[in-house]
Image 1: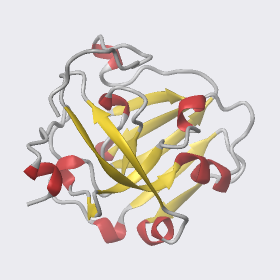
Image 2 (image 1 turned 180 degrees about the horizontal axis):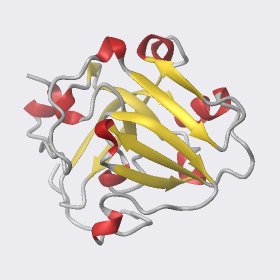
Image 3 (image 1 turned 180 degrees about the vertical axis):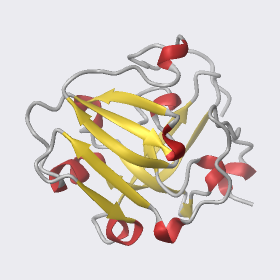
Image 4 (image 1 turned 90 degrees about the vertical axis):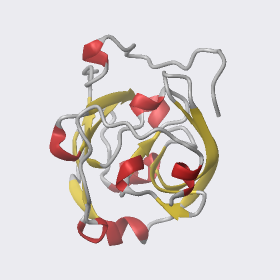
Length: 180
């Protein structure tokens, strides 16, 4: 059992659980407003500078989970693809490209914004957004897209899956009681 499961972290896939995913053959495409768009393989991502941050993933349903999230800083990937100055937003796409969400560039560049693959030293499984998920602890959890396959660099905001269904575009975490 994974640590996230042991903590009774809910499993939630708005677009349907993807089933078993092939970590070793996973790739992440980055395109849009950059001079060097490309796809990164799992092995390429693993060979880049890793960072671990202590932070909380907080759901709009008022549960949260705090721990050590490991992955790559988004700023590292944006540098690799030579992001253009006109980029203002990042749009994440989950496997199947049904689920998407966008975040402002200034949030993406913050120190704890990651493309994460591990929680408390354990690789993320499909239930919790593995092999790669956005981890954006500054915003509600729906901005931390699971099992991401693509990041688009954009000059304008596009509302995503939950935003089109009434969730806020800003996703600012509101003060209140959470279940850890």
